[in-house]
Image (cartoon, rainbow, N blue to C red):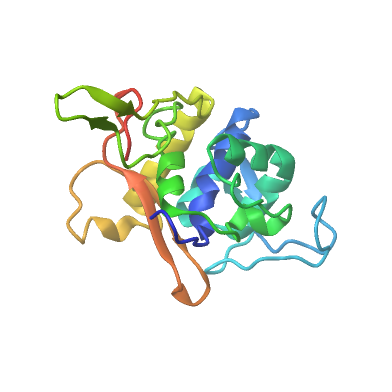
Length: 224
């Protein structure tokens, strides 16, 4: 949780769509899901064109693209959002401060390392409807033999995300579990209403699920 660095892969996509919603996009807006053509993107290697799992082509809503984890739509959305704004948002959530994030279209698909503890903290913006939990810490307080507090970890409130954007993203993440890439969770015993996102790196070196089962009422600065 605190020392390993793993590629988040497609669990990055909610942050990308969150920024698109913050810029005025809606979950029902459509984007082409077909192959990215050489020179189509505004930056990066001109021949870059990620593949999708399955055959997809034509317009697709942002909601469906997030539920089905469509790579080509995510990269097109990222190109519209802008790499600087996207990385700036991740930095504000504590991602990329210890290791610089790549300014490449591959960043839109999570091709960089994160610590799981930082990733869990970043994800709290979705169930919290905008605010992010306090920075993760192991020691909360230290008391002496008389019970007096000799050390207390400062709890810093962080701004997190635009509230409306986070709420729209959380609503889309419900669909990931109800009929998207994580719909098998119900067959594995999940009975609660939940939201989240799957992510798998090449050769299934890393298999992620990041989400929450408690997000229908505001809980202040709680964690996952």
